[in-house]
Image (cartoon, rainbow, N blue to C red; front, side, top):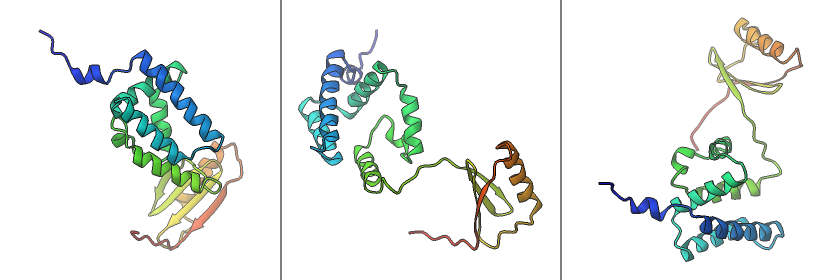
Length: 181
């Protein structure tokens, strides 16, 4: 005897749900692009839509996944992009926290002209952390950074060769202090 999971049935994304949501969200994004609504309005309207159409967050996620599939996107790729924006996808994934997303988007919107997102390689030698992105290198130490250190020089030479002897822009942060804020 099979057990019927009514939650699974209730949260299944049907074609009519997907089509209706797709039209609705396009309308919202058009209004956003025209400056008629803000990001906050978009999320408020989305929450209202969910209430009016009795859509749980899990069902909304399923609808969004199906829409992404229609356009050739993979949800795992989107998840990786969210991670790169600093969004905790472990807690966010199937139990989307729209308030956290709204705050993140609001922060990025407020400071968009001055924020640069970068991916760093981090390596540590003798309590000196080395952060690398492209040809930019940051040496960060709690004390004095000894540029005569053979391990640091060897690491920088190896990385420079990796870049085809491109000039490295090295910044040094010495006597760095940390505190909890």
